[in-house]
Every structure is written in structure tokens, then in C-alpha cells.
Image (cartoon, rainbow, N blue to C red; front, side, top):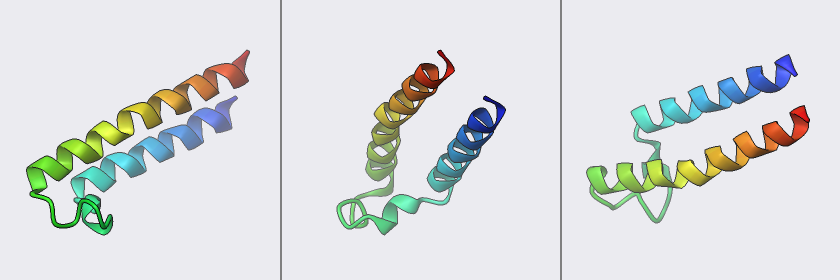
Length: 62
């Protein structure tokens, strides 16, 4: 169980750093978008991603 939390934490840290470094510019759809809009889209895309990952972790713990 500990490795699961550890790797999930590393993933979340990576994604938070991706937002800080404006990595949405790597995506063809978002690269020409204004930074404030791209930031919001990039951040909102991560909401369902995090929800799915947390739900999967809960399933594995049972």
C-alpha cells in the first residue's frame, strides 16, 4: 500500500510542476492559446484525471 501512495504522490508532484512550468505549450491544441486560458484548460483536464486515480487507489485498498 505504501508504494501506491508514494508513486501517486510523485505523480501529483510532477503534474503540479508541469503547471508551474507551463507545459501546456507542448500540446498542439493549447500551444497557441493565451496563457491564462491554457492554464485553466490544463488545470481542468487534471480534475477528472485525479478523480479517476484516487478512485482506482480506493479500489486497490479494499
